[in-house]
Length: 88
Image (cartoon, rainbow, N blue to C red; front, side, top):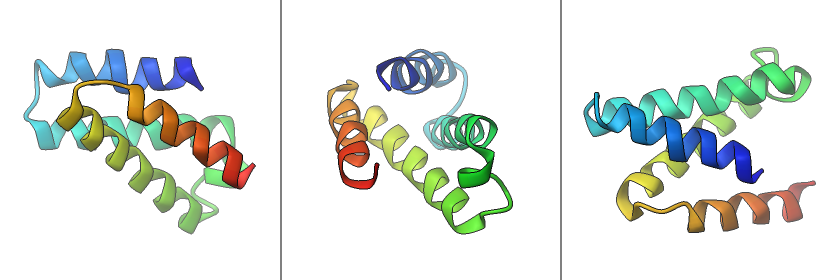
């Protein structure tokens, strides 16, 4: 979980933020977040399950927006961990 957030919302988002406007960065990071889940958990988050895929895309957009606004990963890590405690 930590590495997933660090790679997606830390490194990738920082890299894209230097090259794209904020809306473009948030969009790209959200899609990458969904794509990672869709590739690793296709039965749950793949295109065959559109509601879960949209929820994952929305969560990625929310996390990317929070990261853009706050500048840190602390809240994202707490929210991601809370998601696991509630739904796993």
